Image (tube, rainbow, N blue to C red; front, side, top):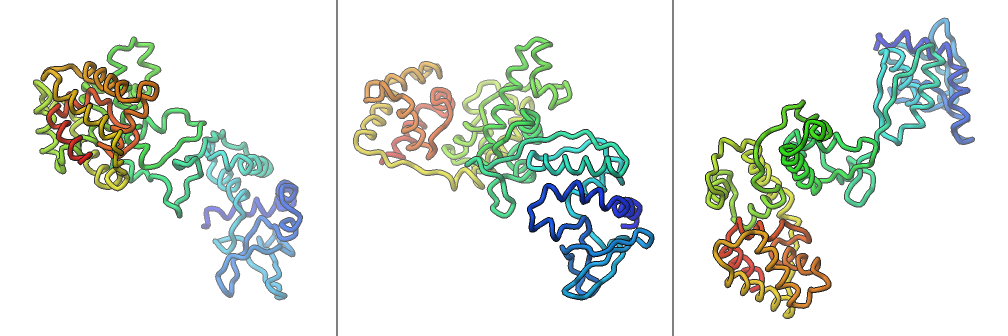
Length: 372
């Protein structure tokens, strides 16, 4: 507290100038009661937002009217607080701050604090105004509402690098930050690593993961997306990393677990995320007779498919089944139906790859369980 005594004296010394900066920005009623100083009542210990009657620079004191009683207090040693914009400028002054980041909702405050710190005799810090974080509805995140995701929660469900990538891109654009955004951010991180393998030196410098990893981009190959891994956690009933790894190794040839540290950690994250978030958000669709018929035809197609059919061929066959069952002009609805019935979500993994990995027989069994 003592550290700020000299800057506080400087504020008192420039009291009138500060009032001339702030007062024009306030409404008429607020102008009547505004003071840069918020005295702490010596009797109650409460911070009082009341007008100051007198100032005494020589003694560093202010006098205020507390319900008809004139009280004189020192502005030093923690006996007085400052209004927000003045306090911000005072800290810039006291700490010689040369760079300050702030949300776009504080731009006006930064402008006024800049004027104040210049009045005090120092240069304002270079500023960087960033956009706000929003929830899934595009509304401002509120701690009290709990409509966002904290850094601690993110790191429970995904790697620090995925968070760095998310923060790195478009800092001046509003970002949606809620729990369901985490898998998308992880998949983007994995995609950036994959792209780097075929990029020129110039292109790599424009790749965000080059900056996230300080130029040392991981060489690990991508096994699958986080989104697909979440579906695999559910469909395989795997609730431990070892069980899920055995499933992955079963359908992936010549896989050495030691070569996949990112994916190994991703399995842990996916199990935690699925149990904490994804499971409770599942809303399985009960198909009507026409939709059930289309899904039974999908099963029939899979039953008649060659054992070693490539993922893209499976994907093409799924398209064909959809077109033959009334979804020719609305294939998006066809895939949405499959996702909602099988996975309980509106969007899911690329089905050709998922079925190829999960196994045709397992997929047939899974669909039958969901429609019966």
